[in-house]
Image (tube, rainbow, N blue to C red; front, side, top):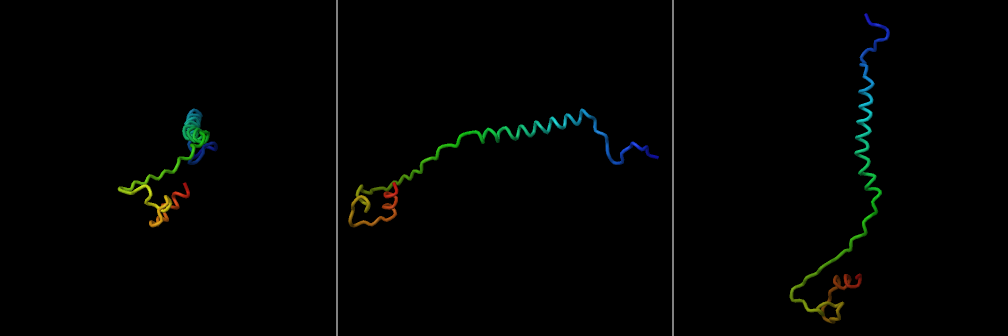
Length: 84
């Protein structure tokens, strides 16, 4: 026979265990959130420049139409030269 104050299927958790569980949860949340806040507070990095380095073996300085050569047509290199 059951007593009136006895819960069916539930176990009573000691108060100290509940406090420990709450403290553990707070610690886990603080460990997870502090790095995110530090990343959010950091100023954004300046944009890095886009650099294209072209190396052509045995190419003269005037072997492009953008350099003034009337015979050679280099539209892609001309566009890169025009855009800076």
